[in-house]
Image (cartoon, rainbow, N blue to C red):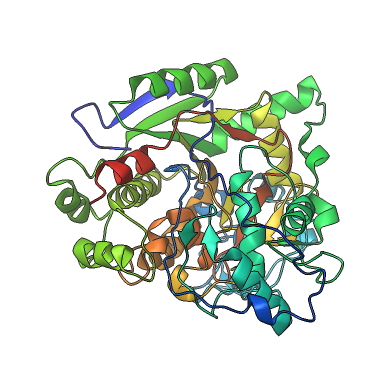
Length: 490
């Protein structure tokens, strides 16, 4: 994603073929009798001071937005009739009352019976709200297991020494390592737990039950990704809904012409119109200053400080120049979405591939499953963390097994297809941008990681990657963000 001399935007029929980006091949650290005699674990409790090496995802530039303003001011003149249930105040809590602009009257938070018929275009009025308490969730593991897990997971990929800290749940680190190396061969958390135990990176699921998704039987199952058949009438309704309410954007570095050709060709096959938005290439001289002037990056952001923190002994993360460009591009396209003012916005990366029948399947999920308190819908969530709330959806929450200084990193990877409610986006962006551009936490420069870390303050839902084939896939074209990071590594 970069900004070059090519046109900033082009309207085209677009669909994206998404493939593989960055893979992490994590090798087993060694085996012996881990956890078989877990009550005598003194031999494993040898802390090592080292380095945490973070391997990020491909620079995802997918985001969707929804603007409820015009829709909700329906025939009854309510400021946000549709969003009574879901609109959030500046503190992130659901609004209890909305004011009628014509009559100055207050209307109580809606129930299903009081809703206008047009409300269903943004959400599923019949789906229960998920509540306010989405604080970070923690896997409680006994001290003996923690010591054993730390000893077994202190090396990443079998040789990279991680920074040792008691603030991390090392048993969960082992499970996430399995998930990270399997992102292009997705499984569910139950399988990741089994494999982590087999490699002696984590305790048995029977001894210490825990899943990245609560209620996993509800949505963390591969066969749930199989598309249901649909009628021609449903196809017509879905197309009408999509064309009237969803605006699609694709972020693409102009130098990646072949990517643009592939994504535009696929979108044309699906009959989807899209706007091309140039990515932000921080290798271009003066680009950071341009990004600050345009508002994509806060003027106060100190890149040198963030980079020095990333290079420091606690993280040893390497260059973050490409990551800053990726984040800048996300906020750039968000700015464009807010300006355009569509009800819903869909942003895709240039290596995204949408499945056949994408429009119908998205329409179904939004209008029959998605609760009305949503702000963001992630169409492809890798290593999702939270709670299943319907057949296809999980409500995301922060990973309490990781400290805040690591941005609670390692879950909810991927920005390949994100749906945003434009009316709620400015409030979400205010929290999100502050989190991303925190020089003391370079992990947060990855926008997907930062978003997951604030999911207790945002109505954030996702489709687990374990569902196959799902709605969006990634083409194996590599990561522009990662390539820039590697090229600028000191």
